[in-house]
Each structure stands twice: as C-alpha cells, then as structure tokens.
Length: 231
Image 1: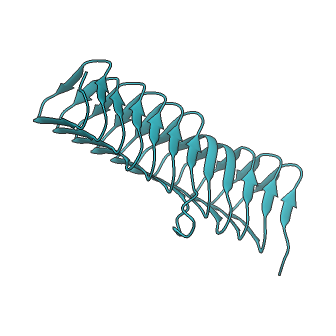
Image 2: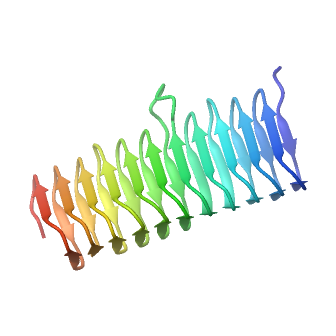
C-alpha cells in the first residue's frame, strides 16, 4: 500500500504496540505501551514522548526517526535511512542508534538533545555527525562513531570500555569521562576532552590539534598522538 499511519493525539496499549506504515508514521501525542513497542515506516517516523514497559524498536527505512523523550524498561533500537533524533532517552537495557544504517546516501546524523542513559551497552553510529547534548551514561561499553564529527555536551560515565570516533571531523567532549575500562578516542580533525578518570589504558589520536581542558587521570598506560599541537 501507500498509506500513512497518523495519530493526532496520544496512543496507548495495555500490551504490546505495533505500528507499521507503507509511507510515514506520525504520532502527535504521547505513546504509552504496557509491553513492547515496534514502529516501522518506509518514510519518516515522528513521535512525541514514548513510554514503554518492554523493548522499543523504531525504524524509518528511507527517512528519519524523530522522537521526544524515550523511556523504556527494555532495550532501545532506532534505525533510520537518514537522521535519528530524540529529546532524551532513559533505557534500562541496551541502546543502539543508527543513522543511515543502509549506507546508501551517507546523509544521516544522530542528535540526542538531552541525557542518554542505558543500563547496558550503548552504540551510536552516524553516517555524518553525532551530537549528544547531555550526559551519556552507559551500564556497559560505549561505542560512538561518526563518519564526520562527534560531540558530547555533558559528562560520560560507562561501566565498560569507551570508544569515541570522529572519522574525518572533530571530536569534542565538554564534560568529564569516567570509565573502569579502556578509553579510545580518535579524531580526523581536532580532539578536545575535558579530562576524567580511566581505570584502563588511554589512547588518544588526532590528525589536528589535541586539547585537554581538564585533568585526565589514568591507571593504565596512556598514548597521545596528534598531527598538530597538544595542549
């Protein structure tokens, strides 16, 4: 078919919720699900706040995923042909945010305006830029990769290894980074970190300048390599 799924107001279900559209999905009010929540669209997927007792799956095959505040007692998986954006995400399980997962056009950005918190591993992948505006807390490892630039506006706290990659652009973390594992940070441009505490090894590389605005304490070996200055 060629239809859209549109709710002007809220959408609620005592059990599982499934919304599938041949074109676009739009929910203007809050989504409340007593079970799992699976929403899929060939085009764009837009929701307001989303609350789910179970896993949340948001898929926009050729378009963008745009959500309000997401809370779930399960896992969160959001995949889009272009952009993935959310106001915030509070997730009891794992988080996977993938922008332009098909790799067809390479135009996808990930943008989480507020806090991103998970009880398990967190994976963020963007075909262009990844912008995480608030604190990032991961109950497991954190892997954030952007083909261009990656920025984190708050603190990073993980319960596993932390890997941050801005393949061809700048990498900037405004807050401190705390991890019981290893820290690997790579920037194809400039790299800027505000310091933190790393129990494992620290490996920082940048093609451009490297700036540490705070104290970076490491219990393991540290390797800093910059194509420009280090300051």
